[in-house]
Amino acid sequence: MRIAAVDLGASNGRVIVGDVSSSAVTFSEVARFVNEPVRVGGTLHWDILALYRGILSGLSAAGPVDSVGIDSWAVDYGLLDADGALLGNPVHYRDARTDGVAAGFDGYALYEASGIAPLPFNTIFQLAAARGSAQLEAARTLLLIPDLLSYWLTGVAGAELTNASTTGLLAAGGGGGWSPALLALAGIDADLLPPLRAPGSPAGTIQTSLGVSPGTPVTVVASHDTASAVAGVPGAGNFAYISCGTWSLVGVELTAPVLTRDSYEAGFTNEIGVDGTVRYLRNVMGLWLLQECMREWDLPLSTLLSGAAEAPAGRSIVDATDPVFLAPGDMPARIARACKAADQPVPATPVEMTRCILDSLALAYRRAVDDARRLSGVTVDVVHMVGGGALNTLLCQLTADACGLPVLAGPVEAGALGNILVQARALGLVDSDIRALVRSTQPIVRYDPRV
Image (cartoon, rainbow, N blue to C red; front, side, top):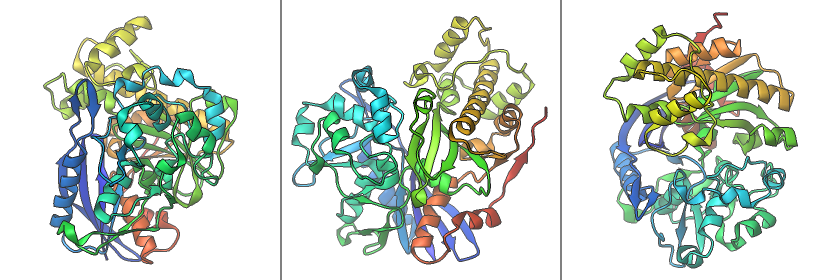
């Protein structure tokens, strides 16, 4: 069967088509389109209509498929009026409107109720920042980004569970559904949120009026891209994972949330995964640090990485979880200031800055893996790195060295693969252990610690 995954990232979107059988999966990218935020009136927005146009063009290029699924980043949303029309472009999670909002809440009380670390961009804080606005007052339905795009394809509204779990509005572990107490704290009515739906359930069919693949089933996948990526991890036994792209999400898979104060103070979050698992993880800034620096430099990535491999190790380290690095703009200056404030040498060249970033990420990964083990009580024998970071051989090796554990890198397209395989399982093509198919079909590169 041919299955289409719509995979939306912070800088681009893709439509990837997989050919799946019970023993094989191959896939290819059939369309790619830019995801470029737009600042209007001082507010940073997603260009959601451009993304939707890219999806339609990509599905047209894909041709006939047996199912379509959509995944994207978390926390951001669109608001619909009583007629189902969108009330303005969704606001970007890096916008400054939530600055300081979290300080007005009892962070640990939120954590106990939702299991979600109180990060400034969480949906609950976005809604609190929008409280009293004309747009929120006029809204009748809130849809997270992949749910909004699915709604435009099918006309059916719903809230996918893994993404809903990131909002800070869902009861911890997901079993209790939307939390009335958390909704009250956000200042919204329960009627604003659609029914929850689990990965693998039907989302509707593509409407005939769109003129693209009419009648094709749309399947609910793990619509938070990290949840799809973790589903695509080829792990077995005791493993940690690093889903490494613009963000790095570092953690372990559990059967129940960890809601202790130690876990809260360590910055761990409990997001829902496929099959009711808990993605116990910490957010690290990830390759965003390097991507933003490269906006200031006219140098190819290959030059930076080859130079960084020869640069002195551990000369300058910054905290890759520090919110000071969250907003866009002049990242080299912010890293330089952080080094200076820590009384460390300030990187003098792009190559030295690149080495600083990669060393800092590797050490942040080690701290996250060590803390995940300590706080959850699980054993970790190997670290799986998936996503674009799996192509960065220097980062993979530095991570193995820092963690003192083997790093298994790949698949790069874990998010799209997880998306496709959840659909394939819903269609009855593969059995319950989709990771076994990943292990048997996808190339993996091993990096052993050098020290």
